[in-house]
Image (cartoon, rainbow, N blue to C red; front, side, top):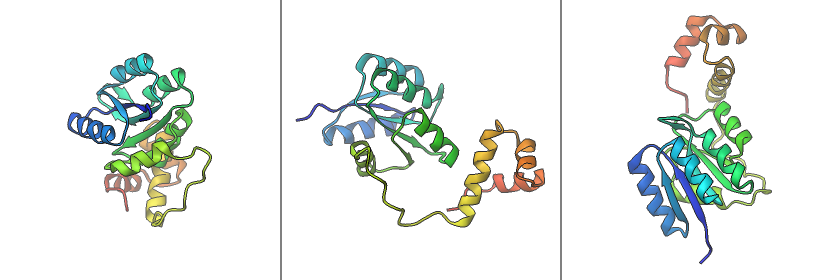
Length: 175
């Protein structure tokens, strides 16, 4: 059996343990961490070849863990998971060193496929591309993040009334 050391970092204990057991059945050797601090410590100790990291953790940002893994193993396959997906955070994850970015709830097959994917292979086009409303919402989210979550500055840059922007952002993201 191949040695496939895997670091999983998520602050949802139930999800963390369930994913750990599932990945073990897939042939990985998981190490579980529930915080940025734990994840960074485990990364330094084990230099994992694979990692699944949640973007938002209670004590900080999962991108810090991705960077810590890259420092000890530049060839690691790292998948970022998040329940708060948008293009801006996906771009930040890839820049930090993640090879893929999956929205929660992601199933084990998708995670394994992402971890084991050929790094040089081009991704397949999506079966269900984003709607125009979703693309607009993603663009607004990206500008909002670039403006450090300042709604007035975001509205100014989008040439939009601040209240209109607040109403758009108060709604759930379109599918």
